[in-house]
Image 1: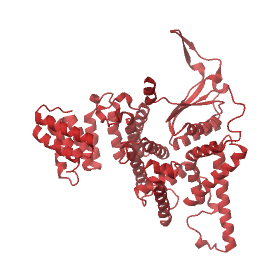
Image 2 (image 1 turned 60 degrees about the vertical axis):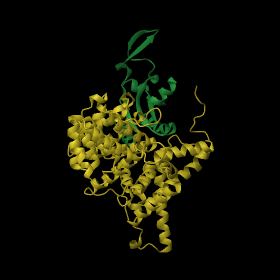
Image 3 (image 1 turned 45 degrees about the vertical axis):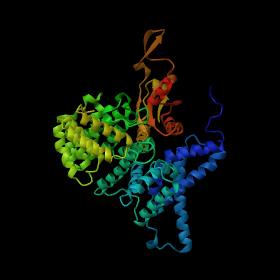
Image 4 (image 1 turned 90 degrees about the vertical axis):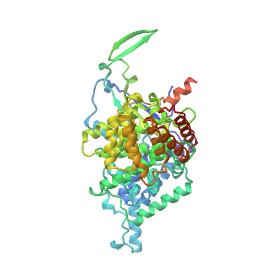
Amino acid sequence: MTDDIEASSRQPAEDELDQRLATLWRVESPRIIARLMRRVGDLDIAEEVAQDVFVAAIEKWRTDGVPDNPAAWLNKSAGFMAIDRIRRRDTQRGKYQLAAASERQAMEHDLDQIVDGDLADDLLGLIFMSCHPILSPDARSALTLKLVCGLSTEDVARAFLTPAPTIAQRIVRAKRTLAAAKVRFELPPESERPARLEAVREVVYLVFNEGYSATSGDQWMRGDLCAEALRLGRMLAALTPSDTETLGLLALIELQASRLRARTGPDGEPVLLLDQDRTRWDRLLIQRGLANIDRIEQLGGTVGPYALQAAIAACHARAAVADDTDWERITALYDGLARINPTPVVELNRGVATAQAFGPEAGLEIVMPLFEEPGMRDYHHLSAVAGDLLCRAGEHEQAREHFLRAAALTQNSVERTTMQNRAAQCASGHATSD
Amino acid sequence: MRYMVMHYQTQDMEDGVLPSPEQQAAIGEYMKEAAMSGVLLSGEGVQSSSKGARIEVNEGKVRVIDGPFAEAKELIAGFAILEVDSLAEAVEHARKFALLVGTERVDVRKVMEYEDLQQGSQ
């Protein structure tokens, strides 16, 4: 059966049209704003023109119907409206005799400066701007989700479980900061690029982690934020295809996301990596993650912390069952990671991997000194790991003390019970390692 | 959520007529742009059915038929897997591709997820 009238050529109902434009905003607005930024040079004006374009679309499409290629219509109209806007501004300037060249608003461009460049450069420019290091991490993520992912302020607020006015404020303030610092829409020079890319990756990973180990809200992970981070990571990797750290970041979050479905038990409880049903892992994401790791190897060069963490995640992804895990390789990768990123948490993970590869005593040599690190003493996970390794080494009395300490330190009631049970097992002498 | 976007062959595609250099460039450009939007997970195109085969199963009896197959426009020419928010979003991406690649039909289908199978078994 076929419809006589094509959906796109009849007059659309009001809410149907709104829905359609909301979808088109999500898909097209990032590139429209990015292109407009190059043309008008100012973020507020670019956003304003983009909104004008969509308003014009509603008005026209309500009577004429939606065109067959609405994206093309929107992009073309944006181009015309940008030129129109600049002309009008110049005319006004002439009228009021304001236009001494030195007084020109530094952020705006002139008509003859308009050149159509590469879309990739435009998008990258928009990403660099919204992830600018002068902004706080919170401001960067909010602005990026809005501008680069095409989310509405309400969507961003929902994603961060924050009231919409707060997010709106945050975005306004971020834009003001950028304007005050005269941040221009342009690709940073080659010398600044690595640091600027690092600031972008930080935002992507922050958003991903906010979703992956939700620190707020009822659920302990939030798929919507993970999905946005993955979208951003994929964009960034497509825009900088030979940057190994960006590929590393994408591989890392895709491999971690491949386990999302297996991380929760039937009652919503967390399931640890080694206990997960690996048949539930997402094979397409694993395949993509592993392919990017191959690309990193082909590209060569120094391997950064994201690529190393991705390589560690890949060791897990390659093991069909937990027992097949290549712990020696994981240990070697953690050794490398600890050299370039020597944080106590990396050390702790290195200790765990070392214990898996070479026995609990080897792990304890790395883990026990961490109690001297400031801030680590009261980290419940450190005591839990120490308890586990001591238990496996046959030091039941010491293990018991650490389990009790972990139980006292944790905020999580499920974990507290687990720790208390393990302490009790140590006391009764029939300790098991799991 | 994921959608599989499948476009159908034209008679030209079945006849093995390759896209013109301009069209190839346009398709390449589109694929780059699709990657830049962060929604494209995977995709492939297939060759003329004369280079393929079909397996027909009738009451457990298997018959393998070598290509080509007569009904060129009923055959898939390629697919892409998109990770998007909604069917509507997948349709907007598919629409642009359809206009570009010169196909007369594109199907946009929701990918079956593990959770969907769980619901089915209950």
